[in-house]
Each structure stands twice: as C-alpha cells, then as structure tokens.
Amino acid sequence: MKYVHVGINVTDLEKSIDFYQKVFGIEPVKTKNDYAKFLLEEVRLNFTLNVKNEVKGNQVNHFGFQVQNAEEVIFHKERLEKEGFFAREEMNTTCCYALQDKFWVTDPDGNEWEFFYTKEDSEIKQVEGDACCVEQKK
Image 1 (cartoon, helix red, strand yellow):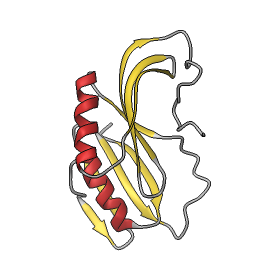
Image 2: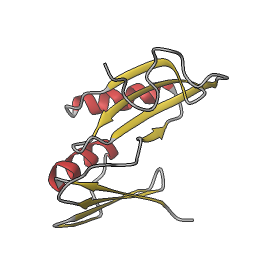
Image 3: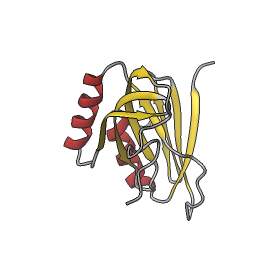
C-alpha cells in the first residue's frame, strides 16, 4: 500500500487550504476550483478536500497524528499557536485506554485534529472529568 486516503467535505476551499497548509506544513500538490489534494510523505497520507454547499451530519469523530514523544506534542502546539490557531491542551489525560499528552485544533468546518503522545496503556477508557476523543460540552 502506498498511502492511506482520507477525503472530507468542506464549505470554503480557500479557508480550508489555508488551515491544512499550516497544520500539515506543506502546500497542496493539486488544486482545482472545487478540490485540493495534499500528499503527506512523512505520514504516508493522501488527504483531499471536496467542496460541498453544506456540510452536516458528519460521521467522523476526529482525526489525529500520533507523535513520538511529549516534546513533539509541545513543538506542534507552539507551531500552530504561532499560526494563530487556538490549541486545546490536554496533558496527562486518560483517553482511549491510554495515558496521553495531547492538544486539539479545529478546521473551518468543525473537524477536530488531535496531536497526541501515548505515555502508557491504561485499563480504564477515561478518567471522569477528562475529555476523551471529542470536546467536553459545558
């Protein structure tokens, strides 16, 4: 296999291209008036943006990048904050049966991206009060 492919629907291609250029740190390899394609060589991901008039009822919970260590979590968080993104940080949180350091950013259509480092496995899914996989509703 060459790439994993993910295609998402977006309402504003220009805003979405800008967001993903900053998150991925690369330019799209192909752009049309209703389409953009990014090839992430380092993570072997073929990621596309597909324009739709309206985006609703998305069945995706979130997307994410698992990184090598906690320092890499901080590196990407600071990098994206410098680009003007709000990064929701969750350090030492138990989620998905693992103790993790992570942060989240949200694209223009509300898709959440998680950057996380797994410190160790856990026998519990999540600790009460910790957000897990999606933002806690207040």
